[in-house]
Length: 188
Length: 188
DNA sequence: TGTACATCAGTGAACGCGCGTTCACTGATGTAC
DNA sequence: TGTACATCAGTGAACGCGCGTTCACTGATGTAC
Image (cartoon, rainbow over all chains, first blue to last red; front, top):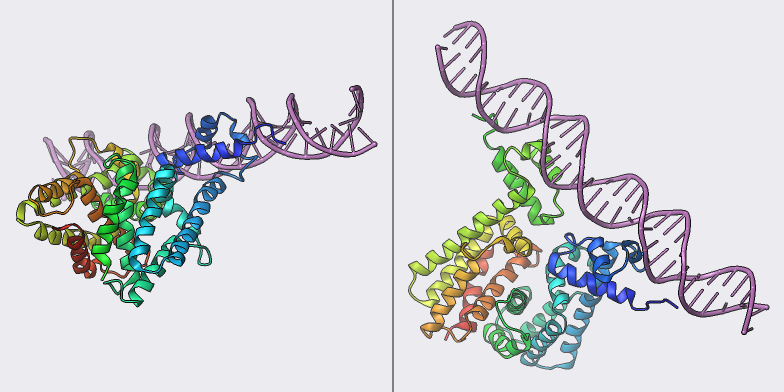
């Protein structure tokens, strides 16, 4: 029985917060240890190393997001409903843990190369959703990747603006406007 | 008269390419020197250091972009024309130098803090453009930051997809679709 | 034209620093008998 | 209950490595006379 059974969680939360604000490379193991109030060596009782920690923090919610998108698709029938549900999902995730959102957005370039073809992938899930809408003539476009990119950018850029203080929290307040904008832009 | 009058340019191009694909932190002075075919020390004949090089590469086109956006606004009268011109501007810049686009997108988080209030700022320029449209009742929204964020994301995310190979080059081919989508989403 | 000197982009070895990681050791807790 | 032992999350000092940067030196080029 460990004396401090929450140390692993505290390392994860401290690392996530630091990774979100400074990026993985600019965050040192010393930073993380200081934030948690333990020695640097203690981190290695819970994780193989800094890279292992960053990958654990990235991949778990990243794969989970793909699964959630797939579930939204499974539980709704029309393109319009799917867009509404998808927006609600993104807003809820952002408002629950903005650090996580910032970290994933910021670390994509460095960590996405580790996402190989067999793994769950939110972008692929989104593409499939748009492909289905195109096939059923519910979407104006013909390229599912392009439609997915436009919709994704239309949501993530306002989220980024919130992180920079250009737009107010919570993101859920923006949900109706974002849903409306996407529907106008891509629905037939 | 220097023996190799283009060394500074070659350093800049090599650094930009490396920064674009790996990020500033993950790129070493050794990488840059090897790519150019000079010694690491030679870099310091042209730049104060790695940070100075990164900032030069970032700030010059970043400020220039703000200026170009302002010129588009100055040279057009209607919101619709401004959107068309803005899309053409972004597509042309992307197609001319995708490395530069990738570098700016990727390095925002690390380098934007150095952009202080007096400096030219493309996001501010964009916000002013949308504020003018809102004031003249040409835009559906009421929050210029939100409208700017949606439009920006709708353009930059497809550009990012091109970088990842999810969408084909050139970006200019997407211009009509992107213009149309933005107008549908934000024009009154 | 020839000579002496100044300039400066280049080299490559060396530097110090801070990073991620390791390791011998500690001491609290759980377990066997 | 008491004793001996196993486990393991923690410490903190130390490690090696690679990074950005410096520096004495080189040699090609331009300039003065």
